[in-house]
Image (cartoon, rainbow over all chains, first blue to last red; front, top):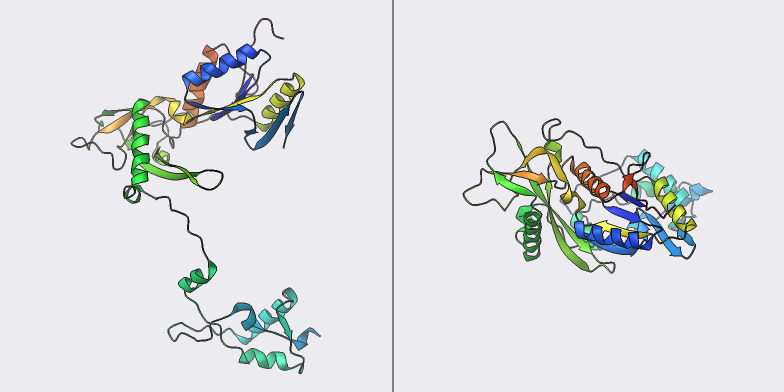
Length: 56
Length: 276
């Protein structure tokens, strides 16, 4: 599952392999900065903890 | 009751008493001044002084108050502690005087060459070249210190003609609802959501149209000043830049087995056999 807007994108997946694969592929194809876990996206602040995602 | 109060305006404004003979003195009409006084009586209680002597003192003191003076802007700046930040140059001529901006411009030129954005060609007579300009930006760290000086070449997209320099400009953006759904679904499935940021995304977009740009200010090639660049990739400021980038990422994701959502063009899904 990938969702992007202009030059930011967020992604998540049920398969850990696929997620990692996607990341390396994207990093190879485009010049990217890897921001790791989603913290701030399009004005939404996000806090992730097991089983829940808190947005504000 | 309120008629007994006079307004001590000199205490509030600290007008310089020595009137500069050159400055013009504005004398407000009596009616206006009275209106002023009664207004400030209602608003600012703290600066009011109780006249107390007689009820007619208000009118008398109005005519006695020193005329309002005019102060020069420099006076005001001196007393107001205006902070001036290190400026960002407005154009190439200003930037070229500073070492850090020259470096930033060189970096931008190198990255454009490396990206194979354009190729130098002769401009055909019936074609028009879009002008370029430099945009300068200082990027700050969170603590306010300067992170880097960024110079970016942008195209003057406003001079592009529809049908000639561009055809389609629409590019989808993610809707808030979509992002929330992605987050909600991730929470339910206990997934981690990761984030990537594409650097200078628009420069990746490949152009469908024939677009020519002039040589950037200050970087005209010696002896080839009349030539222009034929763009292969998009530049910031071009009308079709977002679309070109979107097309590029769409193509890439499709090649990698993703499929675009029917109802939300910014959402892509990739399924594996064992999932779902």
